[in-house]
Image (cartoon, rainbow, N blue to C red; front, side):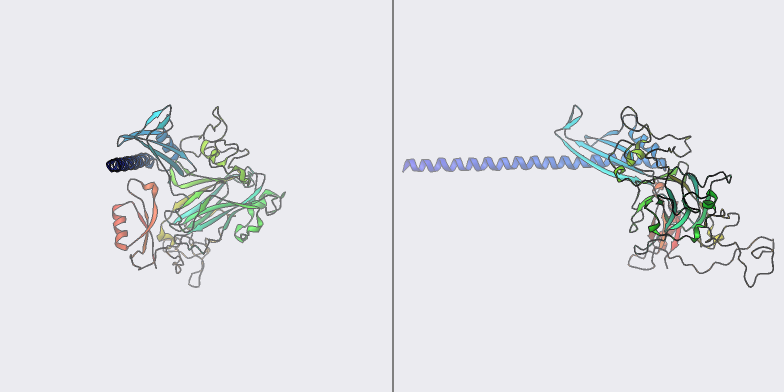
Length: 470
């Protein structure tokens, strides 16, 4: 009996010891996991801190994204700093003509061994900084100037307008700007200036441009071998868009019409904002549709369009492009002809704000005196300054005149423009304004606010009103 009791006591003690050891081990593991979790949280905050620092460096550069990338990366290739007892490293890279990708990594609780971070937490966050492009900040004259063509295929160039509030089930009808052409048909020495198409664009309109590629040039005015003047004189306003006319379409922007700000540059085009004018852009397209060139992580500009946009032409000893060059700091980057070139069709898009009082508030209807469109550019939607009417006195010109002999604009017709901010509603939003955040005006975007909120924005910020809901 005594031995049995002794065995029971020893067994109970052993069981309790084992149980206590298991509990302590579990507590240790829990503490370790909790410590690791806390380190991961701190590493995440460090990464975010580095990202915020990089963003504050980028914003003052406005549209000079190349300069912003160089400022962040410096000579070392990334930006480094300390925060909360850890370290962040941020790298910026240009992923298009108007977007910078920021990769910020936070490190905490470990150490660097031969370039590798060990025994600590690491958190990586990636986000993009994008400046608005091809967006009319105000009622404007749109001028699209044909710059260059270095292509064997023929391509027609089209415009699509997305007015603010465009419904998802009503895609805009493409408007032909330039008839199918190639190899500089439009720059044939027949005129001193490149051909320019002129139209009016309402405030807040997001524009997109695309080329319709016709590989055998069957849609070229005058045919594949016809005279170049046939191309220049073709009335594009009479040409309806038919997708079946073209082998493929290459867009400047990939746009989500549910959220017009959520747009990306197409891999087939390079959209570059002018270094000194945020309402002026150059668009260059690649017309060959070779899907093998779609290599987002590529580093060789000879087989990746993304690498070409990032690194520029040619290769250096590291197997990467030597970078983009500019004739001067106020010029666009140099384009070249090659296998992957983004120079098959090239245009420049310019927006020149106009006084709505002159246009009667209808950018798409009225012509501005002294701003007549270039002939042959498909400008039939811009009527004369003062079309004749029953009440007009006899005159040698098209319209009536005021007491001083100047041409008087006609009264505006009923507006057909529907503002994207409806009246009423639970939040009372009804006014669309172009909001330009203080300290980050390059990040301007349209918001819907109440009338009182709009007045506050207009008074305190460098914002301006686009339209009022109806």
